Image (cartoon, rainbow, N blue to C red; front, side, top):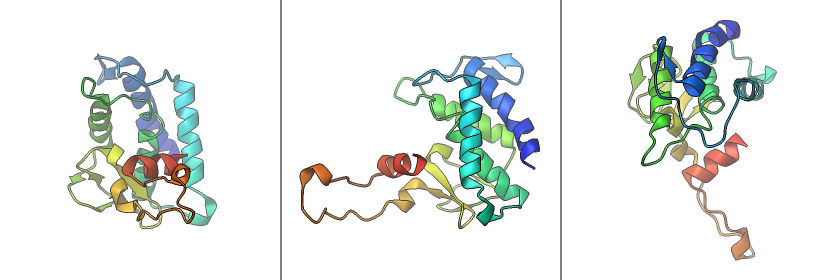
Amino acid sequence: VLRSLMDKYVQPCVDFVLEGIEDDQITKKLRQVIPYTNLNMVTQLCQMLETLLKEDKKITDPQVLEAVFIFCLVWSLGAAVVQDTQTQDRDRFDRFLKNLAGLGTMDAESVAASQLPAKVLYEYIFDIDDLRWRPWKSIIPEFNWPPDNKFSKILVPTVDTVRTTWLL
């Protein structure tokens, strides 16, 4: 299953991110925060897959494997893609990936592995325990002051801090 997912997604996504190739047409290349090579991207993808698909999880359902694979694609091949007021390249990568997947989309707080969230994939985590897509904001813990009240130890959980901590 993983080999077929690699064949389906990796080369088209690498070509889209690095060269702007979409459906054999050359479009504008995606802007990246830092330059990535195709080797960097695929290495990061494989490391994420290895981390998430541990033997103790025993994930064999092809739909679940594809959802995990898509999540890993977003945060490996698409991780350095820029999104700001002038450059909407994460949105472009999101549309490209959803089109390539050919799965239905659903606008809900929790989305089954057989579908993709209708909103941008960058705003979702694929919950490996529940086997569902969930918004990052749904896993933000409640803020608790550090016991010693030292300002230097304060880290307020936000979508960005939770996402970055999880990915690292």
